[in-house]
Amino acid sequence: MGFGALIIGDEIIRGKREDKHFARSREILARRGLMLDWVLYAGDDRPRLTETLRRTMAGQDVVFSFGGIGVTPDDHTRQAAAAAAGVALLLHPDAETDIRARMAELKQQVTPARLELGTFPAGSRIIPNPFNRIPGFSYGNHHFVPGFPQMAWPMVEWVLDQYYHDRFHQQREVEAAIIVWDGHEGLLLDLMVAIERDFRGVKIFSLPAVHSETVAAHIELGVRGLPEQVAPAMAVIEAEVARRGLSFQRK
Image (cartoon, rainbow, N blue to C red; front, side, top):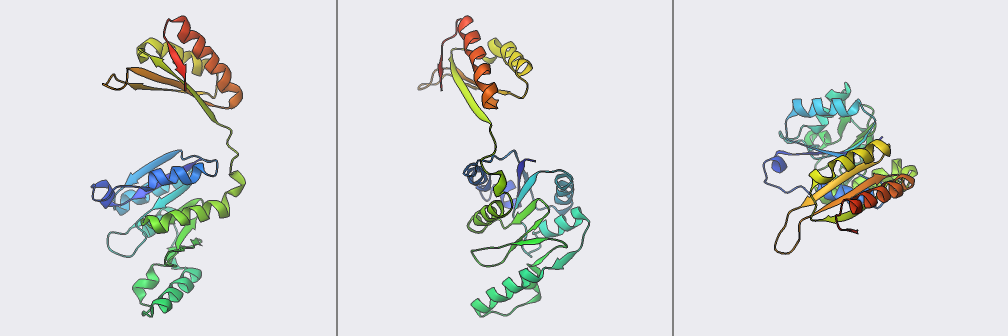
């Protein structure tokens, strides 16, 4: 089980708005010792959203979906989620209570359109919205929040604290790396392949940087994995880089 983010909206795909959910999701998870495994972006297209959600619902990942849960013609997420799950959209009683309470606070009429904001796939649970009391919803391990950051981010934190607190700070993955000066990936490719072959479960990475006025050409070469594997893998990397006559420094 990993964590994924589905970020929805034509305004993001077409560049009218800059996405902020990706970076903040990583931060929110990292504060709890968790990490984001993947992110998908999608426009306001109901068939594509339905197919995407059908695929993610078939897996085990926890998915946070941002955007498209309103009632305007370009909002399709609630309907797509219901279609993907194969269930009906129903007015959730707790959502109705919150919506009616919010309208009473504003001294506004409760209209069918406003109640539609509380129609979620049958079997959903609500996600409280501390900003304006118009809730999001959870269906299985999928959690649907508005696209507005000031609403979405506290709602994501609530979901994590409510449902996944037993997983906080349980991941043991660590990372270590060196900076290899004046090297290039072609010189080290066989070493990278050997490390992943000899240290099963370790993932190697290499991030090259080209020469500029302020930075010399170099490669950040490192591994991620369990602590008991990362340390010996890095020892092999450092010894082999030195043997090849390349200078390096630890990060």
